Amino acid sequence: MMKKLFLLPAAILALLVACSPRAEQLQTGDLIFVGIPADYSLDKSSMDSAIAQATGSESGLNLIHTAIAEVDPEGRVWIIDATIKHGVDRHPLDTFLRDFTLKDGSYPVFKILRLKDNRQAAQYVENAKKQLGLPYDSAFLPDNDALYCTELVYECYRDGNGQPLFQATPMNFKNAEGEFPLYWEQLFALLDQPIPQGIPGTNPQGMAEESVLRPVAVELVGR
Image (cartoon, rainbow, N blue to C red; front, side):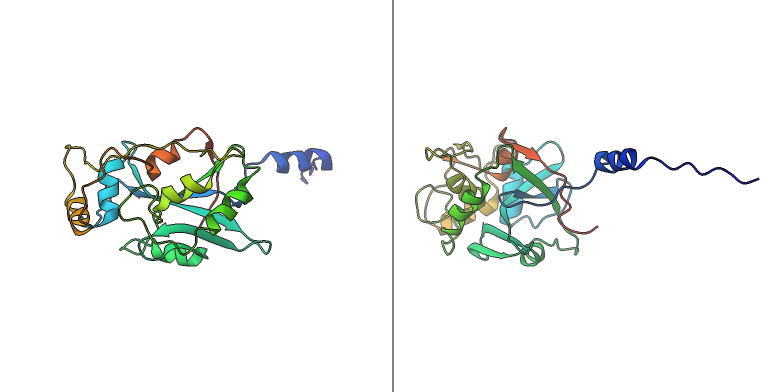
């Protein structure tokens, strides 16, 4: 017995396709947050570990870095960020992925957030490009001609009146036990300065929770 084949009208089919969920495309000005699962074993002497201990989330994902995305007219993705390795630099996405590949060869979690009002996103990225070549701010201090990752975003994402879109709050370098991780003690001893506990600043975990941002379903790398 031959079964009848029912065809949906073209208009209904088009509506179903349009309403089906699909990943969004990365856009210029999007912020890429690098997340490490809380139970992942990081080198205890690393900056990433020290950041995770001081600013880690109870959600099980510790955000340790923030980068700015730029998509050029040909669709190529560039990353602008501040790292110890490169300072403030602009490089291809592949370089970013290679730099943040975990020791077991896997990728960390990449959380993509976009400004709810991103009409000026291109200008924010141009602001960031003007900072290229500055050194990484290992001292985590404001106004010292050096920038750390979220400080770059904080300084470059400003409204038409020059006010930052993100909030600076007293920085915390202590772990859950109220102690400074050994990394911070050694770093600031080397810099011959006190740990800047309480000085206004930013961090990836706090920035990701700002109300001006919204999550976007962007697949940064193939899984």
